[in-house]
Image 1 (cartoon, rainbow over the protein chains, first blue to last red):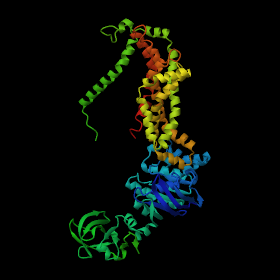
Image 2 (image 1 turned 180 degrees about the horizontal axis):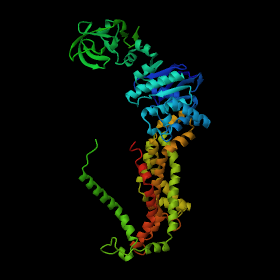
Image 3 (image 1 turned 30 degrees about the horizontal axis):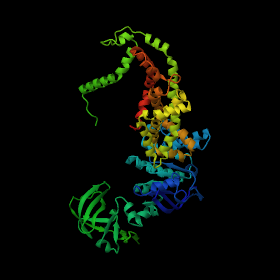
Image 4 (image 1 turned 60 degrees about the vertical axis):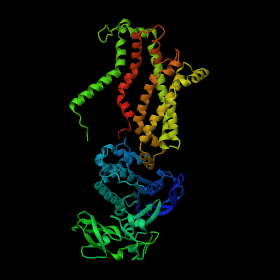
Length: 333
Length: 276
């Protein structure tokens, strides 16, 4: 079991309130991602759950038990750090065995569990090396190995992939998702990368300035963002926004429309614009267009499209998929 | 891009480096050579460099006149004792400054270091009186304590710098892994700080070994270390260069040999953190 409940949890450093009181429920076996720009309090929230920081108010429950004042080790959680935080003076084997040694597990059992974990993570041939002799991806796997041997109630990941290069990050993303499928253990994952959030999460928690902006499944957030912040943060390239007269046509203060919901045509459409830079990705082309009266927008077009810098194009938004926001930036439904 | 260095440039650099090295080493070399000369050759003008009758008479005479081994043992006890005592006090201090710093930690560190800027002679009188009062003048305990106090700021600073280099996340990871405070210090922190602690100990033994102001002023016969042993050859009966050199060589040899064998550790310690 690994149900984590936050009730009115708050955190201040001195007089600075980093996280105003918030409530959150992480269900057993769920993969929850905290996402937000840097400084939004997502890592602090994770550290509060881990017990590495003390709460300034509220209670944290794990499986219904109040752990607000329980030291980290007694919470039954395992954590993977951004910098891997491996013990540099110990071999991979000893690193993975460390939590078991601390728990007083018998030597024979430790050996068996470490070898099992190493096999799952493809680390068997590196067991006697030191962390310094491993690549970034291998180090991250050792960190994961160290956390799985304990069979924790839940895993906490603090931006575990941000030190890896892009290709490796994609692989590790898959590996972590697969690990979640096979272990079915609760995972709480912090990232500033909305792609990671979208691809891995069962449930995304979008944070800004310590406040939860929206909680929902990836597609739910993508389709029905609750406010301008979520609308702009989720999705890549980001949603286009327009206000003024254009928005008033839709009875809104601001409207948002995603690049893929704009139809580009050389002949005719609702809006006329001038083509700026086109980014060719092969499968798609992202065309930056300056529309008179609307502003600069990004449109997603076919990979084969060929538009010159300064060409005139016509754009038509998919009216059924235009997001409308009121004067406070909240979604109108 | 690596800077291009021509061969000619390399040769010039090498020559300059050797010249500076020899210049710095020359006084020690000269002392060493003089210790094997007779008193007459020692003051010969022009000076004789290598071609003289090598003799060991200075060494035997020095040993006869003043007991080298007594001074040597005193030096060892005072240098090692004050360093170990200092490290034992400094470790917890540096721990708390590095890992649970308060608002005033930086100020305290600076204040501690500022005491090193104070001229020692400024506090000689009060300390001398305190030593008399406590009855520890010319005692090994008194010297051990005073040298520990003198070097404590440096020991704390050095250890603090080393401990600061240990990433916080690794300690947090050990906490997540179920380590108690004792296990955290024993299995994670100390093994990672060993190179730093070792070089701190080495450097402070050297500093304490060479310390002359307090050892000369607070000792007479009983607790006198090698510094006093050398000094005793410089005054009352005029200058005896050869004997003074022999005494000096005997006094610096142990620490030089220790430094030579531990130079790898020392360099690593002094540049710790400079290169990741």
